Length: 64
Image (cartoon, rainbow, N blue to C red):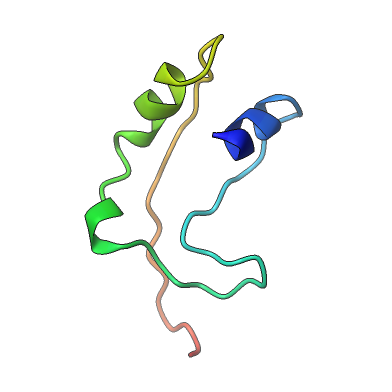
């Protein structure tokens, strides 16, 4: 939640899930592949409610 709030306190930005601090793409756990509930989760846990948009991106041709 802290990352979403910090982005709301500025001009916005992007929050990447499944990417480590060093840029390594680790991906999402199989139980978390459905990201459609993330906007409502963030709205329900912030006051005032933060409105976010979420989308899932799949990478192809990534180097190991």
